[in-house]
Amino acid sequence: MIEVESLSKSFGRVKALDNLSFDVGDGELLGIIGHNGAGKTTVIRIIAGILHPDSGRVFVGGYDVTEDPVRVKSMIGYLPEEPNLYERFRARDLLRYFGELYGVRGDVLEERIWELLDLVGMSERAYDPINTFSKGMRQRIGIARALIHDPPVIILDEPTMGLDPATAYSIREFVRKLKGSKTILLCTHYMEEAEYLCDRVAIINQGRILDIGTPSELKSKIKGNTVLEVVLADPSAADISMIEGIDGVKSVELDGNTLRVSLECGDVTGRVLHGIGDNIRSVNTRETTLNDVFIERVRSP
Ligand code: ATP
Figure 1 (tube, helix red, strand yellow):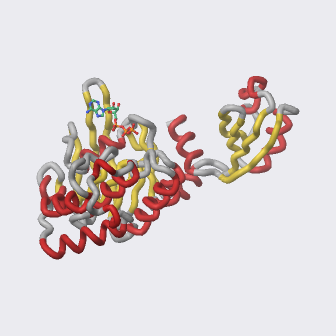
Figure 2 (cartoon, helix red, strand yellow; figure 1 turned 90 degrees about the vertical axis):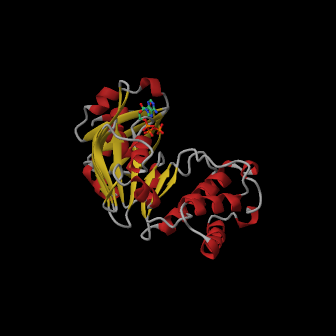
Figure 3 (tube, helix red, strand yellow; figure 1 turned 180 degrees about the vertical axis):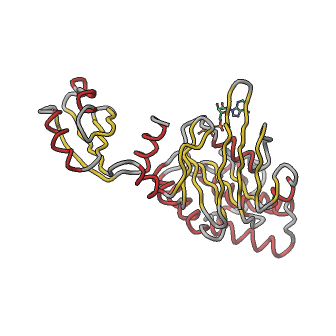
């Protein structure tokens, strides 16, 4: 449904996108993860037709974004990182305004407005102005606005950023319910969110795709699947290079007083603990997560 071909975009000396290519299948939910400034928003703004690339092409449903911008925009529902909602509008009027802008009219529009307000849990606040809403409520209205014209493609830029856990959870569940019926592109910093929601995940760094695949494909590419977390009594005494030198240790990271050691297999645990000696407060082993993949891929692209 979405084809991104060799996109490049620079802002002055900053190369935001560097020959970036990927595609999103019909009904697929593709997640894009990357550090601040990796190029996530730039690529989705180009797909949404808000920004022009320096080179490369984007097709949505077979239509070229540059050659057929109006048609492509009508196929996309876009929730920007900070949705610009008209503050004085009441929620219901805002949805009516955007629905009409996209050519939805009459009873169909009215029905859709109430259906969406209900879906995002905002029907009770339908007649309240946007400027009385909390961040989470605005985000819900932003999602309803993105869906008002029932587009086949949804683009969500960090939809749960800065929300309390309960609101973030309900938005994630809402996105999960859309899965399959819509093609979704989701930018997120939350690895658990990506792992929970996405069919495939693209890891972006400095405007390039480092890797793309299903969460389990990405995790299986890291050799071994065990992470040893050791809480140290004295982190300043940790001899990281000695532990890195142990056969079977793939990477070592000191995070506060926790030493995170990625192992080729669980059998290496004993050698690592022996190497740390009596500087151990507690030990935990766990399976590799998407976060481990992200850290490893970004560290050694
Ligand atoms: P974040 O996670 O912080 O939202 P991001 O991955 O979405 O980051 P982008 O917003 O795409 O990153 O930015 C990529 C690079 O392009 C950054 O170095 C940014 O400073 C630069 N950039 C983006 N938009 C502009 C602009 N309008 N003018 C100048 N530089 C820009």
